[in-house]
Length: 409
Ligand SMILES: NC(=O)c1ccc[n+]([C@@H]2O[C@H](COP(=O)([O-])OP(=O)(O)OC[C@H]3O[C@@H](n4cnc5c(N)ncnc54)[C@H](O)[C@@H]3O)[C@@H](O)[C@H]2O)c1
Image 1 (cartoon, rainbow, N blue to C red):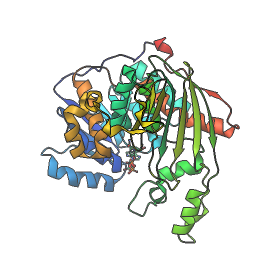
Image 2 (cartoon, helix red, strand yellow):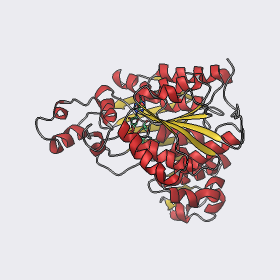
Image 3 (cartoon, rainbow, N blue to C red):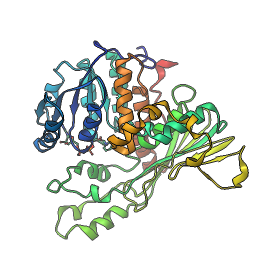
Image 4 (tube, rainbow, N blue to C red):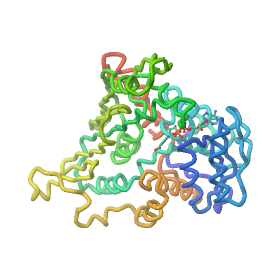
């Protein structure tokens, strides 16, 4: 089987990208808003299991579009969407549906853009890789954090060697979602599937936001590969205590047992001997943090807030320097942010990075270029989910990364 790495997008008509969208919940609606602002993108069809999710979208599209997309409603209605004439299928549904939907879409001849994580199991990651190779369709994971202002700027600095040889990185998804996690079917939220993850699994359920940008800085897949990892989950307390304070006695949620520890910490070693600390917490009461630390032989960068330490400029002693005040910062800004940053900030999704991502996806398709992120990236960045579960369940034993990129060697 030949690799999909470095393979350009194929598109019948470079002027237009015909898009079908599965999942019009909170995330889907936000991404559709970004998609409609991308030149050349046409929303042809949408599908969701729930009438209320489609209804919300229909209300917002009425004001924006003259020609409405086709609407498909019901848990299996997405299969009918795949029969339409589409170039790209975007998937923003609950985690368990990503692999079957992405697989069926590629088999139906469509390129795929799937939300994070692309898969929850090692077998699911392989299925995406093998289906992409077999069908010659791309499966891009919508890892928006790779398009953040600082992530793109730091990637350019790292690749230019400003921080020297990178030997270590740290990253995370630390986001206090206790309120969202405890929503029930009858409340405003629909996200009960998120809580099910914490009941059924114990590990890093959401590794890609932290790991994706770091993997790009380290050129995982080109210069280096993930080799093996160890993982440890601590005790659970934050969600159950919060639940007991906020959910009334007698509610079935009071009987739930959450397996997932408050914090999961994993340590990845790459083939070039670099180390990456990867953390995950959806329940700890602390400020949002993806860490995004790159540490090299000539300096370091750390986000939240963005700051630099450069060996060559040690006037600040042993203190970080505010990266926003860096002289000549403009030279490191990514061209996407220079050209489209204002529009991205106006669009708003996650500080503009959602729009930059969607725009790049549509532009690379129209240009017949290779995607920024391919199916091997989707698999590499998602697989620490199941690997962390395996290691954490076995006293942090090391587990090898599957060699999804075998065809590239
Ligand atoms: N990249 C990001 O920053 C980001 C942010 C939020 C969510 N997400 C991801 O987006 C996805 C959706 O998250 P959300 O917050 O929108 O959740 P949500 O619960 O609000 O929406 C999910 C939608 O998927 C629909 N769905 C489920 N099964 C379906 C099926 N069989 N057919 C059609 N529709 C189906 C549900 O009805 C719902 O409307 C998740 O994978 C999540 O991880 C990513």
